[in-house]
Image (cartoon, rainbow over all chains, first blue to last red; front, side):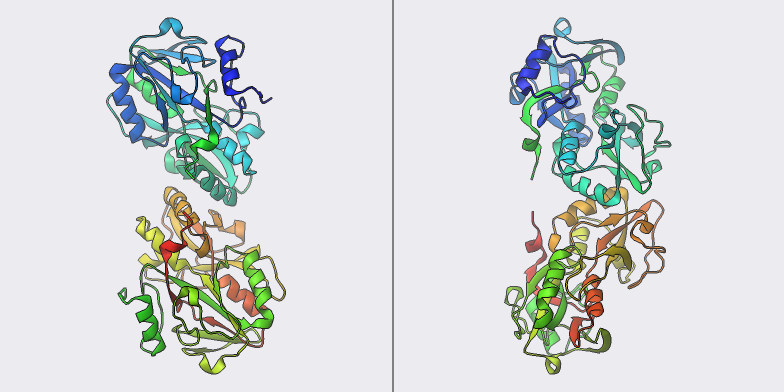
Length: 260
Length: 260
C-alpha cells in the first residue's frame, strides 16, 4: 500500500502522531534518509567517518549545531518528523520513541545519509526484481570482514545488504546503481559470500533471509546500518538514530540524486 | 613494445609493407577496428545483423559501395591499410594476404566494428589488470549458447572473450566498459560459465587459456569474432575480414568513443 501523500503531507501526519512505523513505499519518488544525531563534540569525527567511508555512509545533509532544521531537504523538524527513533546511551539501545523533543540538546547535530529505498526504486523502474520486496521481507543484512576507515571514536566492520540476481541482471543493476552514489552507489561485492566474511546467507545479522534461485548470484551493497554500528562502538553518552525502516521522508526527488 | 608512430604514420608503413602482423599496442590511445568486407548485395542484411546485435557487432563506420575510403576514420585505403586479411570463399577461409587490391570489387562495402583493444586500454588506465596482456597471450574466446538475432543469411551463436577479476574489480570493469558501448560495452555475463554454455574455461574455442586465480570470477564480454562466425555461416562467394589481431588502426581516439 503506497501512500499518495506528498512528502510534506506525510511529515505533517508523522509530526501529528498519525503515521507510526515503516515508511517503505510511502511518498514514492522521494528520497528517504538514515538519521544519526549526536553532540557537536563528536560531529567532526563522525563527518570524517562518513567522508572516509562514502559507500556505507553517503552524506546527504548535515544540520547546524542545535538546529532541528534540515532546510535543503524540506521544511523539517528532526525532533518530530521521523516516525520512530532509537536512543543510545553509552552505546546501548535504551529506548524507542516517536518524538525526541524532550531529549533534544542545543549541541545536537543531525546527519542525513542516503538509504537503499532510492536505488531499489531505480531497480524496479528498470524492470528488475528486488527480492526482499517481492517476498514482503526486510532486506537481509550481514556484517562483513571489511574494516571501515576509522575516525576518532568511530570504527567498525562494513555492513552490507544483499539482493540476488542472475549475472546479466547483476551487471544491469551495477550500471543503474552507479548513477546513484548518494544512496550507496554500485555494489561492493558479488558472488562468493565468504570472500567478504559471510559464512551463511541464510543467517543474516539483520533483516530477513531471502530466497536465492538456481543460477543467481548474491549481490552485496554497502548498507546504512554501518554508521549505526560505528555509532554504537563510539559509546557516546547520548546519541539518536531513526528506527529501522522508519526513515526521514524528504522533499528531494530520487532523480535529483542521479549523477547522470 | 608499443610503437610511438601516429596512426597515419603506422598506416603508411603498413601500406608500404613495412609493418606485418599484430597491431596490439601500436598507436596507443587510438581506436582499432575489426573489418568485414562483403558485396553490396548483402550489405543491408549485414548492417541489420550488426544493429540487432550491437554488443558483439558495434558499428563504427561503413563505406560507400566500391569505395575503399573510410573518411570518418582517417585517410584510409582499406585495400592496403590492414596488415593482414583473411579471404573467405563460400564461407571457407582460403587465404591470408597483406593486400587485397587484386581481389577488390566495385560493389564491396567495408564495415568497421569496435574492438576490445579500446576497452582493455581503459581498464589498464584505471589500474585494472588485463590477464591476457599480463600473460602475453591472446585473449581466450568461447562460443556461447546465446543465439544472435538473425538477419538474412547472417546468424549464429555469440562469441565472448573472458578476462578474470575479483568481484570488486569486476564491478569497476562493468562501470568503465559501460562508458564504451562502441567497443562491446559492459560485459554480458560473469560467474558460472555453464550459464552461457561454456563447459571448460581451459579449452577456449579461439585464443589462449589464461590463468584464473583463487577468488576470481570469469567476466565475459561480447566479442568481435561473432560477426566473423556469422559471415562464415552466410557462405558468401567472396568476403574478406582482417586477420586476428591485425586491425585497422584509425585516427579516432579511444576517448572519443566514451559516451560519458
